Image 1: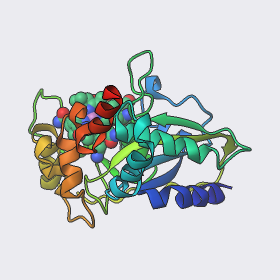
Image 2: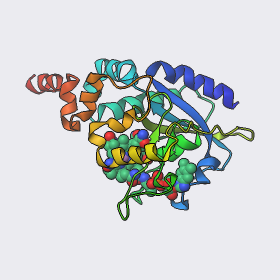
Image 3: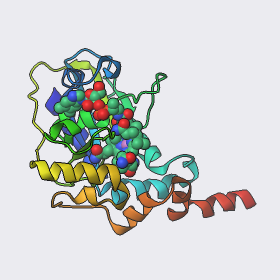
Length: 243
Ligand code: B12
C-alpha cells in the first residue's frame, strides 16, 4: 500500500522538482514535545515534501505563466499549495490532509516542524546544537539546520501529506545520511546558518550535485514584495489597473 502511494506521489511530484519522503506519524511524535504532536495514530502514513533546485524552473515558472492573474500572495507558496492540492485528486478514495510549512496554529506554533519531519523520514539530516559535543556558544540561541546529501542546503521543506485512512505496520525507518559528520564541520555549519545565513554559504557545507541558479538566488534574496516584479507580475497588475 505504502509503496503504491509513494510511487504515485513520486510520479506526480518528481517532474515538478518536488521530492516526497514517507514516514510514520509515530516516528515524528516520538521525538517532539507533546505540544507539537501531529494529531493522528502513530502508524498513520505521511510524506514530507521537499522542493529541490529544479522546482523553480519546473514548477514555479510554468505556474506563474499559466496562472498569473490568480497570483495574489507569495508565488512559491501558492504554486506549492496548488500542486499539493492537485495531488489529492489522485487519491479520490482516500482522505488526504495537507499541511504547509508556513501554517501556524492558534497557539502560534507551527503546524509541524519541517526539519524534524525531514530527519525522521530519512530525507535530510537535522543538525542541532545537541549534535555538537563541546559547543562554543554559551547562552546564545542556536537554530538547527537540515542538510540534504545531494543538495546540501539548496532545498526547502514545503509541506506534509497525511493519509489518515492508511495505517502502515511494517514501514522501515531509513536513517538520514550524516553528511556533516565531524565536530568542526558541524560547528562551522551551525555558525554559518545562525550568523551568516544571508550569504548562503551554509548551503555549500558539503559538495553538492545541484544548487539554485543565479536567477533563483536573486529571486529568494529579493524582499517578498518585490519578487512579483522579478517574475514579471507587476506589469500585469498595472495593466489591469489602467484598463
Ligand atoms: C519560526 C521559523 C524561523 C524563526 C525562528 C527559527 C527557529 N528554528 O525557531 C526565524 C524567523 C528566526 C527563522 C529564520 C530562518 N529560517 Co526558519 N523557520 C521557522 C519555521 C516556520 C518554524 C521553526 C520552529 O518554530 N521551530 C520550533 C523549535 C522549537 O523546533 P526545534 O528547535 O527544531 O525543536 C524540536 C526538535 O529539537 C525536536 N527534537 C527533539 N529531539 C530530537 C531528536 C531528533 C533526532 C530530531 C530529528 C528532532 C528532535 O523537538 C523539538 C520540539 O519539541 C520553519 C518551518 C517549519 N514549519 O518548521 C522554518 C525553517 C526552519 N526556516 C528555514 C530557513 C531556511 C530560515 C532562514 C535561513 C531564512 C530563510 N527562510 O531563508 C533563517 C535562518 C535562521 C537565522 N539565522 O535566523 C528552513 C530551514 C531549512 C533547513 N535546511 O533546515 C525552514 C525549515 C523553512 C523551510 N520551509 O524549509 N525561521
